[in-house]
Image (cartoon, rainbow, N blue to C red; front, side):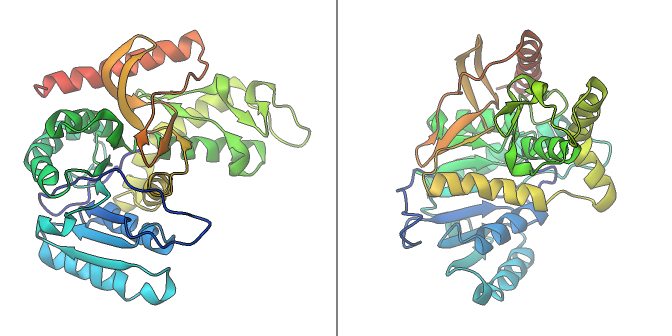
Length: 343
């Protein structure tokens, strides 16, 4: 789920690293919970806000070369600290503010405009990565890197190659947001709480993404067997409409208000929580594939366990032939863009 809106007023950098696992139930007393955010635009600032009010980090640092913008966002956030769990929020136009971060979230990049696809941003944001990421390695060599910049699967692949970081600590936000949109629409149609829908979008965070209908469930009932009186059952046309709305969701929001920020801010904070609190959540994040269903050296989203050690290999989630074929096509789409960029 990457941000549809790059949140930077210029060029910036990112990085992040393996962390000790704080005791979530025993209090938020870890001193190793510094989160850096690259880009103080709508997405970066909203991630900082969501992380602050949820008490995810003890220290949140914003980096953006637009000094007035980053200073204003930091001041605004600090004015609300009284009403949030104890934390420190700072920011700068100097990359040193990211030094020794445990996780660095990169939101910086070209902004997706109405009518543009995420892949249209590839060249500009790849060049930004080449300028930014070496500095990230310098100031946060042990950090875990969480990419939100679009096209997130391509950027995740480039980040691994540019930084030389181990594959497990370079994570793309992937289809975490798409999966949330998917669950919301299924829940709305079937008249159940979204928390009781378990379903994933896999593949590219973009136009070739794949809904994994065959493994979807509501309250442990396979979705293809869902027939509860008074709650809608999904027909083929309903499924088609849901998938179309998932894929077009970002375009709908961007058309109406210029950027997506609230849902992506919450989605990224969800990933941060699983990393910093070692929660081992199953999330559809983007990461390197090595031999998964015959796919090699490509980054895309499939359900994985996410913890303080980063990401694990993909879970062996069941797929139909059509789902696997769609995933292969999505992988080829991502791989072709990476090759076009010369990586």
